[in-house]
Image (cartoon, rainbow, N blue to C red; front, side):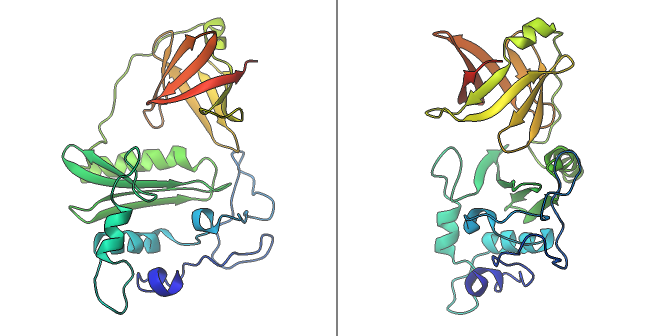
Length: 257
């Protein structure tokens, strides 16, 4: 990775060499949980280094995305060739290439990818037609909340598509009506909970397994929206099972409180 991608992409401070938790590593922003406390050891080390082992900075990650936007076909000093770039950026499933989401937003191509290790949240957007790249990194499990606000603000300033504010009408549901949806939900063909829902103050409060919280505001007796990212959720009952539909992804309730 250092020889073929990082160094040619001018990512000289980036590495896949893992740092030992509990040590003093210069320049490392230590991870924090949702309560604002530093996690034990400062950070986790994961066995899946390719997916969860890159140490980098926002500026150097911008360099990587620029390299992906501008591949080269020469024998030396090549970070990414045009053939590799085309493979990475060709959608193969649900709008995703090899790790990167590719979307058509109002006639413009947009790339996106998010990251979430314990106590860290990151995200990037890119528009290859204008060579614009946005990278957000936080050392908090709450990072997505402020990150979404920053993304919306940047989009408004730079006129990026897909950033228009959505106005909805909130429904007032009783605690009893909200309680119908409380419980743990699993992805298809899995009995392991992916997220759980509880009743909040006029809303549903969700917790993803492994960390990460979200809020669902009611729009009707069965429709909800996450105000942080605009994701709309619809609940339905089929054959006695409660189903959660999140943009076409169906989760089944596996345990009701």
